[in-house]
Amino acid sequence: MQRAIVVAVETRALHATIDAELDEFEALARAAGAKILERIVQRRDAVDAATLVGSGKASEIAQRAHDERADLILVLNDLRPRQRKNLEKIIPLPIVDRTMLILDVFARYARSREGKLQVELAQLRYRQSNLIGSAADLSRLGGGIGTRGPGETKLEVDRRRIAQRIAALNVALRNIRSQRALRRSGSQREPLVALVGYTNVGKSSLLNVMARSDAYVADRPFATLDPTIRRVYLAPGSYVRMADTVGFITDLPKELVAAFRATLEELQEADLLLHVLDASNAQWLRQRRAVEAILAQLELDSVPAITVFNKCDRAVAEALGQTGALYVSAKTREGLDSLRATIHQRVAAINDETKV
Ligand SMILES: Nc1nc2c(ncn2[C@@H]2O[C@H](COP(=O)(O)OP(=O)(O)OP(=O)(O)O)[C@@H](O)[C@H]2O)c(=O)[nH]1
Ligand SMILES: [Mg+2]
Image 1: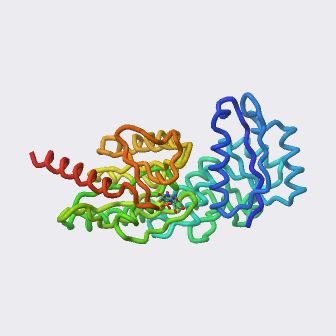
Image 2: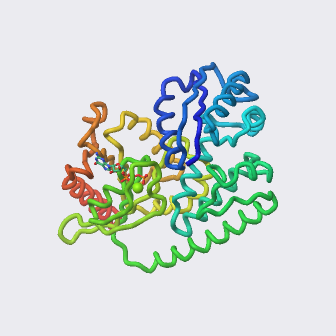
Image 3: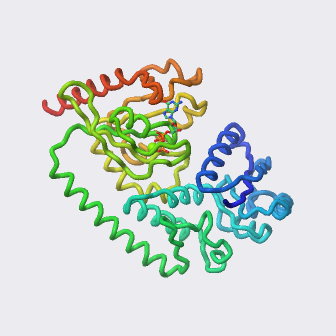
């Protein structure tokens, strides 16, 4: 386990949401295998242009890191390349930002060949555009959080080889996708319903209770990275294919959106989206907005959708009574009959429309 100190600058803009963002950030850090020693938050009107935190604060962090034998610094705010360089001069430890942390969780858990290639592509693009990964940096980092590639391979060091590797990854991904498109065009299709939503809201759990399947479920961000499809019974003679997808998160790194774009755009073929929300999370509205923004970015906002609040067995008051939404629990199985009935009606209505 790597020992990490979490650092954040609380600007005015962040004031209202910083606690929730730090909780989420630390959940990501734990999923990446870090042990969090301490949270250091500095309040400022704006971040310091040179060192993110003030330079005095940076020295203080360096001292704490030394005293607590920390291995790395995790920074919540976006870091410019220059701020990273300057901070690394004051704090002689690897500095990992939120994007690197998310990419690291993906690298750690991607299983399918396509998933691994996509993650590696995203990581290399990020390193390229943020000027990370000179040989000196990497030898110091030694294969920990921020440098781990999918399947424990080390990220490429040499810039010229990074460009070559990116090109090779793009070719390999195109091949996988064209094979999948061929397979799909042959199959007689039942309607496709896709589960989408913020990470950890219970999409895979819902798929499991609906399809009596055993997709991987875990109480950590990004448990699902590889798309799965299962057949789900709705009513006599009525079945749909239900797709589970990677969860979304606020400010999903653009490199990840780009790398996963092709896979996610296949959701445009869905007849219906189930936008799953976590009724037990006080942050559900913020999560909903983040998901809606990503759906728009992927041009999925024109696909018919229904809103499903999951975890209604422990709902917070503010999540209740939203009009037009369904309330279910994958845990207690409450509300699943009406979810099946609603999907059945919506899919039938869509099919009728397309016949006319
Ligand atoms: N109390 C309660 N917990 C639930 C319910 N559904 C899921 N969970 C828990 O929520 C956590 C996340 O569930 P997942 O099904 O892995 O969530 P997901 O949306 O697929 O998450 P990612 O794949 O990581 O995006 C797990 O610990 C589940 O046991 C529910 O209805 N009630
Ligand atoms: Mg999942």
